[in-house]
Length: 266
Image (cartoon, one colour):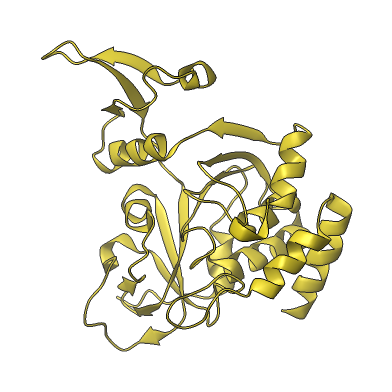
């Protein structure tokens, strides 16, 4: 089955109210080109909006979505630009109470996705026991192991509506390679309703696949589609771009200036 599709078709799958999962890790292999096209669509049509942004480690591409005013709530265990500093729009919107932050850790995200992958309502774990985190998440309940009576936390299943990941290469049937630094892209591919993959190249056939065709709904050709984040071994982080962003953006007004230049250059 040929799963190649256009960028316009792919971004049309993101609708208002969607829980949008972003693949990649920190500033590596982020679907930046897809996010720019999604922001363009929002500026032209006013949709999609009211997004729930889900990212294991949120970076510059997620900051763009928040700065554009498309995000209502965030689920992540990290949001920042690594050595380049804080994510300015996340910092601004969070400090001013303009977005809802759903408290998460590595464990709560991993266990929630595992529950969805297993098609069950929750996944038990020892994480958060003895911390103040349960007070911030009343939806996460305490349970007891029926076999030994141990107290555990029940982390509810997390089901993204749509996941967008960026691949090093893919074939038109929908098999993709994402490299050794996988993050939770494989879990997102199993847990999400719709899974789209932008890719550096579309090859006739792959000798191996990290995510196989049945879990992928669409392949979008997007050379240099992770920039300014890296896509090893093809290209590195564009550190100058990210540093300029962190230095020039601090308010919605400065963000609009920056993102306007970026969109017009694409």
